[in-house]
Image (cartoon, rainbow, N blue to C red):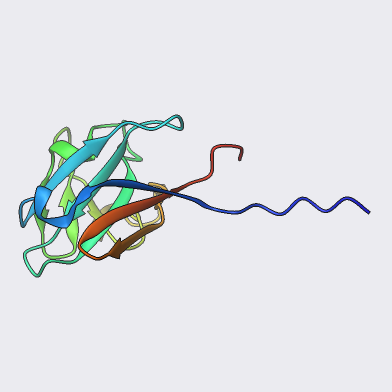
Length: 114
């Protein structure tokens, strides 16, 4: 029996302090650009950098609370789930990228074979 087990590949993409509070940074990856967000409270989240509405670059949006507003049409996206909020709820989803903070460093889990 040949079992294939996927082991996550964790990639160090910088320090938490590289991202300003209420800000974001774009990180290129083989699967597409990833947006890493930092809230005013210092929480960090990672989503694919494309709004589910028209593909707008979420990394260029405004971070408020635990959400980001898309710069194209102002859709509000929940940073924890990637789901649109308010009137746009249920109209698509931005994929969440697994993110960990270890010793002040940001680590993304990239599945390069999925």
